[in-house]
Length: 283
Ligand code: PAF
Image (cartoon, rainbow, N blue to C red; front, side, top):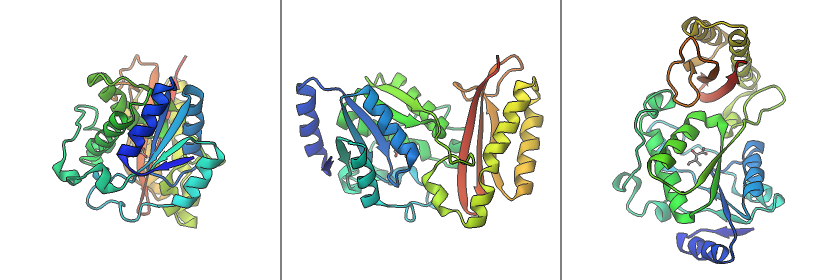
């Protein structure tokens, strides 16, 4: 695996691949790779000749009181895992390489509308940071396809919208959530959980499954379902940030006739903010 740190070397290397007619798949990450990330790489390998993973803990998507400094950095383990998968290129730029003028003094990409709800409401500016770094990676790499996890459902929806709005010539692939045996969605932030918090964590998924069952059984009082689930989670020891049943594409409230839903939750387990979601189609 070729480890590249500068944009210039990246572009020279990728130009050679392009000249040889090879397609490029991109998997953007912030490192601390788990099975969920590795599945993104495997999917990228099925869709492109050359796969490049980027590893960059992007400061512009973290709020002032968030976990930028403590975000887990496990570089050598990440390299070992990517090499075991025969990844072609790992791009690991520094913050200065990406934001030579500083993150606050550079142009940024803003997607309106769907960035104002859910995580966008709780983490102001977060999606501007995400769309800015992702569009920079798209521009630097000129990748043919990029793969993102569906665990960040809203992030994926925002990126798809950006690609359409800005006519970016790239195919976006969403990869289903990879879960631990007990149902907890894999996340780099799970490592923050104490033993007790880790035991509580899968209850988030159980709660999503309960709502799924109710919707499949015909329940359509979305507000009551949401309120009931929130109070159950809060009683268990979570501090719910949001729990919404929504239209999966528009991320708006569903109508009583809708048959397709996304149930999204964000909740604090101790100081750790966990997110999860469940997509369902009632037939
Ligand atoms: O999902 C993530 O890990 C990040 O938001 C991403 C897409 C790599 C951008 O920094």
